[in-house]
Length: 198
Image 1 (tube, rainbow, N blue to C red):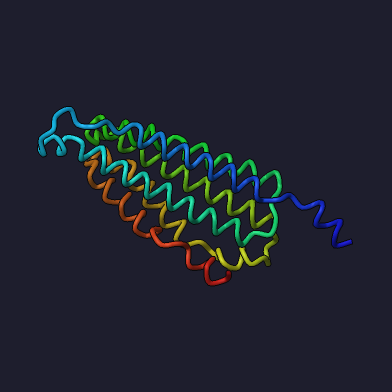
Image 2 (cartoon, rainbow, N blue to C red; image 1 turned 45 degrees about the vertical axis):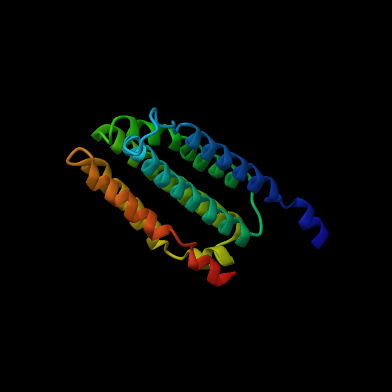
């Protein structure tokens, strides 16, 4: 009977491998968008500084999602079709990070591109939230994952900050950028809620 249940379970290894591959491609696209300076003097680096800083911010965000995604799947015992679609939804928004990063950098952090970047961050956060909920439904309300996630105050605070930052980009883009950095710092370390259960 136990063997039958194991046979019916969808294995998460393929989902993890696919996600890792997509994230690797996203990072590769972002770094390929960075152009070398035209001249050889040190002042040329000041012109590429915004490109580098936006790349670092996006790289950190991609790393945060990759790290926490790993923790989510590590603590989950099973996945199903809903989880797979939720994962694709998250990856869709993450795949747009190179576009948002490049647009924001090319326009010197103009209001609309900076707000759009915030929208991408908000939608990725929403995608992550949906993935967590689908994993909880699949693994059960009493699963280790459900206990570890709890009420997810960190996730809710992050989404609230993104939604605040989007309109603030039209007041001053640097306020929005400060909020994006603040959220990244909030998530920089792996999610200790899950690590404590593991």
